Amino acid sequence: MNSLVVPAYFHPAVAGPDWEALAAHGSAVRAVVLNSFNGPGPAPERSLIAAAVATGRPLLGYVDTDYGRRDPDEVLADVDRWHDWYPTAGLFLDRVATGSDLLIWYDVVMTEIRHRTAGTVVFNHGAHPHPRYAELADALVTFEGPYAWHQEIEVPTWVWSVPAERIWHLVYDTPAALLPSALKRAAEGRAGVVYVTDRAGANPWDGMPSYLSALAR
Image (tube, rainbow, N blue to C red; front, side, top):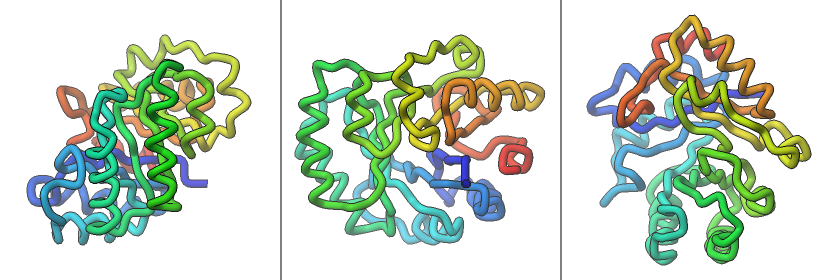
């Protein structure tokens, strides 16, 4: 089973070698999240399409939900652009709320999304959400953050009733020596799909980790 997901928040015009490295390790990758413009951008990018297709892996279009504060029509417009402009196999909804109070908002949006696409939909909560979110999406990112925080996560009991391949972790600021520890902690947190990088800063997903080969084994 492919257990690696790559949040590709970088453009081939400025990170061509990273896309080449990703393509070289594509067999280990479950999915690639496309996000060069915090969404599909103003128009389709041929170079991005070519680089993404070269990975040979399913592509997920990035859509920001701003924790339920974004206008649903704007969210759905991004969904349509990804569908019309790129060969995506699904969507990666970012900044998804965790509380039960916004379940109705996401339920309504997901009903419209399911009418538009039969592809995979991933919710990135970055933390453990209310368990009913697992009924709406195909996979949940229950952790996004640095290694130090990852070591301290507490896993609610409901997570163990969800198949591991539907639980994803994204871990950054992880030195190479701590990669095995991060992967072990992800498994302890029920995550069957993981991404770990030594990159940090405002956008730790702006390139591939220095230990990509080890991660992709």
